[in-house]
Image (cartoon, rainbow, N blue to C red):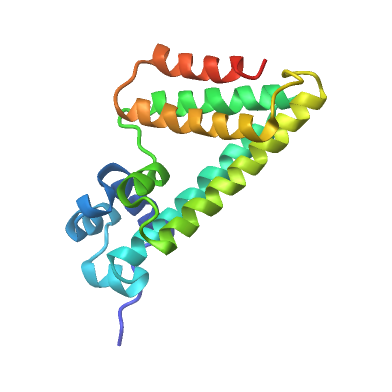
Length: 192
């Protein structure tokens, strides 16, 4: 008779996300994963499949949670521009709050690029979803006169998305709080 499961799948998956975010796929050994997740090797395989399947599940969960939270912040401002400000400064604050900032989404792109179709699909879906939300807010801000009338909403969304990635990468490289806030200020200034 099989033993009942003695761990929470969701808690274990969140622990795996942290390991993969910090070490990447190749750098994350099965032993490091099982230790962090608080499970045995067989439980990992029985519950999540192999290391690659676990990585894909971790990336799907991470991107879904991350994009959902970013859109919540983006749409939470009293105006479109305030939402954009809250979003980019939220990225700065999140990076500064973590002594070892990392992003599984960016890590996956840096490690694999577009070489794996499953991974590329997860990344592209997340990127499209975020860029669509950014473009929508840029269009609203433009209609409300909060940003320049000559600003192209699609280009501004792409630039803003790149600035968000830049903040995360710069934070991971050890950038100062002033440096990160400077990136945010320049991204907002570009909307005038």
